[in-house]
Length: 384
Image (cartoon, rainbow, N blue to C red; front, side, top):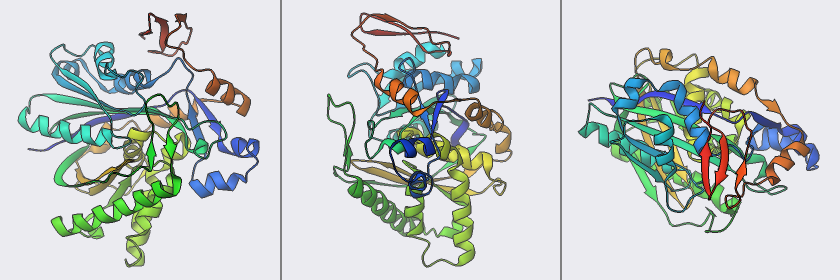
């Protein structure tokens, strides 16, 4: 039985900041942002939009009444949860009007969580082939104004519907996971922003990929020629390229060019959005599928998922016949192009205008499923 991604979509808030303007405001060479880390724009959300509004807006365009009736599990991967007890997936379940007899829960392991959800969804469908699972990755990456991580911030969500007979990507059984107790990136309870050891994080990311690649070769007897492309978690777009380059050194020039070309196709959307934490890998997958003209049915894609702390996984899937028909190739560029550009002052004002969940407040954000009000520490969401 084939199980995999049947539908996929992303959503980002309607505001962005040009990285040249941020660089000028921070008195650094714009090339440091555009070339050094590989970012052109940063997605920005106002306080009335959160991981739930992103998630609902990502899900709505791809889910039919039949899907809502067949979904019996809702998994939300995030490291931006605003409740220490209640899962955001429960609220998402209600707003989407999914049938009531479903499991709904949240998973946390830094940027790896959505991949854990995807693998769990696959196993569930293998046991319940008539059902579907909704896996959503939704996050807000924030490091603070004038911080080292500021240019890698971002916000948004990716929604994936998992089913048997998938129409986009059939997940293979070949996967290798790696767990290491490392403090490269963490956010203790009560902290607004994460604590980051940048050099250690970069080193751990690259070494994790190298270890998984070698173990994948050993277990499954695979070489780079077996993969049409390798898609990476992209906290910033140069990060995945650094890891990929470590296994290209001894390859023929034609192989290096092929995989690097596919890599550049996979980071197009990320360059305009920034870090989506749990959603970053799957945003890269969407970018590859929608911008590459070289992919065809039967192509095997390798996917590298990484979550600081650290858990990583290398897994694979094959493209299904007519996968292009299930993509939203026109909608996503339109979403990005219709966003409103902010000045640095506007961005900083929005950043500092934090949400107080302990203060009863009414809001007036016209975006569908934005936060309408807060009352008794409960967030109420505006429906479309």
